[in-house]
Image (cartoon, rainbow, N blue to C red):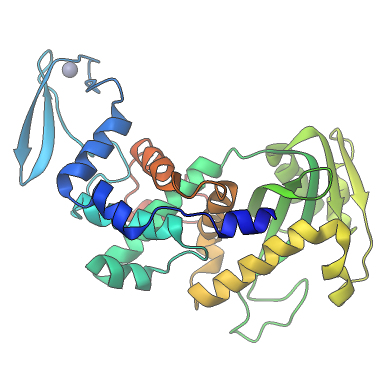
Length: 317
Ligand SMILES: [Zn+2]
């Protein structure tokens, strides 16, 4: 079964991880390889002749042509961080190998940093995942559903329209037989205008949107996307509905993961980033042995994000 193939794969063990990335030098070499696969290229003049030096133990390069200096991590998500690279790598390893995500509190303990540092570390890595998944598009058979984050601890009533909850859309591209392929999640009010914008960004024709018939999903008609509503009547029967097996499995796992990992967080403000993490890990679930490398490569090509940008309102891309 596909689920077992995902769950039982070997991934990257802690011993293998430390063997590959257990020292500052090994981490530097990995970042260098992904930043400049063909060798150093000066960001100012594209020159390739350079010299190296260290300042406060940090590795710097100086261009021989224009004398521009840059550090190994400048211009990447690691920039302006005082954290040693091995700590970043441990955080990336924990985040990519965990099934349910890792809270900032767990990172604090495992990486050995203060809580504010762990928060920043985590949100910078989530931002990398968000930007990597921002252009994700689904096609073919797509199951869609409306769902909510949060609200459980604030007296919010269950179901649609509850207060203290962040609405989001979950869409799963499946094979014709209903096996999940790719996931797309986005904070989104359940209005026709918002669903139309989501579809324009995230769905590519030819596509068939399989929904439970919620009115806003009809917005895709006229966009070259077929809409296949199945009115389920809600409740337990709707969860078991064969047309929604993929989306219900994904949403069930997501709910369990969030309940177990995060007790509370600024759902409204950071929902896009937490959802992007779920989406990123899901869409790379078939090869856990290289997912760290893929996140590292993305981190090396993601621009620096200072604290203010990360704390700003949603979609701070
Ligand atoms: Zn130069």
